[in-house]
Length: 363
Ligand SMILES: [Zn+2]
Ligand SMILES: [Zn+2]
Image (cartoon, rainbow, N blue to C red; front, side, top):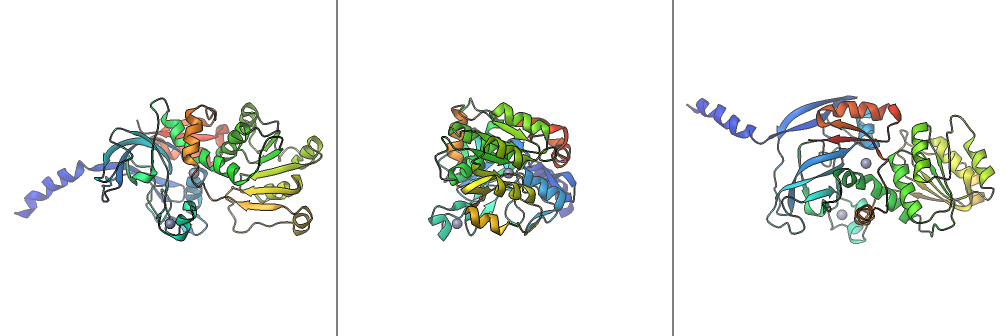
């Protein structure tokens, strides 16, 4: 007799099914039907996804199945640069309401550990990060559940594109803040001009940096850098970028942001920095160890700072975007439908067609 009820129950469950784009192997992904996530805590928010940006780290998981010790267990949905609309809230939610358009902060710190109590939420001992293997499923799904602390309402005048881009952009805003200097009159290098390099350049311009020197191996990206206000751009595949920068700036550069994860960029940075200069490392290399020329490092007394994502910079970033003080209009270069996510990933993985940022639309 029970069997008669099974199809009915299945039918009921089907109402809650949603589509989720999941990694299923190296350079493989599939559109799957999975259960819609549910609100389980009073502070949970159910979000219908609208737009997602494809990040370099998503691509690392796509092509290598891991970043360092974070290894993908298949199937797994990545994605952490997202914007959406609130469709349901838990009983204790006070900061957002149903219908709010939001930017999503992918980090979910515990707010209790020593790091959180010191204000270092990005290095929380119990951190869960959207789309990070072993921590939380990503936002390449029609619906996701996030704590309300990760939901940032945006004004009606702000596009979902800007809201999604606020995530990588906040990393640039944070890195610039972490350099702890008055940029007026300072000469700066940005080695690697993908979305993160661009996210560093925009706040540097806003803060009045003097000359910004940008390198990348993709000409299309260098064109964008120039249009954004870089004083000089160079391609290390076709010219000696260290010699070129030395010629233009004999006293060398005050600070360099490494944004590509390449050893040659670190070597170039050490040569381009003036004594007492600062090197901020943001890029994620595909290898496990950096190497540094000890003699030059010592003689110049270079200060090295690692940058771990961002901490508390999203609000400022959204504010600057809302006031049109950071122009990200040149960042999205390609658009895809949710069902074409694999094409977006293949494009970004191949650095094809001068891609800067590929955006994915849900409807
Ligand atoms: Zn990212
Ligand atoms: Zn914590």
